Length: 407
Image (cartoon, rainbow, N blue to C red; front, side, top):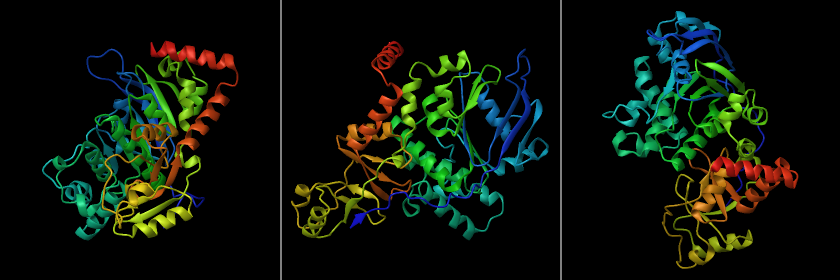
């Protein structure tokens, strides 16, 4: 069997998010002479991801929390889909907005399914509807409902808990999802996978997502547009990542993004933007001779072994397959796996860490899509580097700036 489910053209998913507009929003704290956020005007389009980034004390988290009124604005108005939500009941408002914090913020003594169904139960959904929604969302965030629904948070990794937190935030199908440093408490490898999962989920659901992060690289990877704030909630620049990196609006922005800005532009290419090749697949218990014949017919020496859900568990070569009459149920602990939304730099990191000449491409639920080769990634990055630095002097200037930044 050969997998050829590479992403193809199709109808764009329906936008289910809502626009957000801040009109002169201000927050003053008692005893402070300067406002935490001063007269902020901001419009976020329905269905887009906007990331807030800036130094500590710039008001990014305060602004996020004013959108669902965890913090009440001192002045100004906030609109969601042209509704003035500063006039609404704050408790009912928060039930209609998804909210994700670091470490998921799960109720520790509740099972996963009970955590996910918390808001729908408050809204009076019946059990069947909650169960159906929970199963759908766990599958969406890449957790097998049969395996994880009954678990307690303590029996899960940090990354798995964060996935449950995202599922819970989406449970009542809110138009807006707010995320406060959502991936800051997990290791770098898990963080990349969670970022990719969020992008895949957004591609399917098209909610409006607002993310606070202290990491500019994360802000440019996730955001359709990036809001860079300075002290007092002052907007230094609000634009696409490419626009910010190519044309910093102020000296503050130029200093904030640093000397590696041009190199960061190379991270915009995604795995889905380059060639994804089909792979030969096999199931546990299949005849090794038959699998070998398929692989040779496809002119490859590598086979991807799938579990019953279509997720890769091993990536043996023909010599390893020939060692037994049937495909063994061996699970490789370190498979190089990336998502279609992964950047090419993420893919290259995976390949180098696993010492493989490529990476398997899977959906957020772990279903196999295909294979992206080391040569494809390296040649694409090399071409982009040549375009960014077309002559020897430009490249020399780049190296010098990078060395200074590293020092």
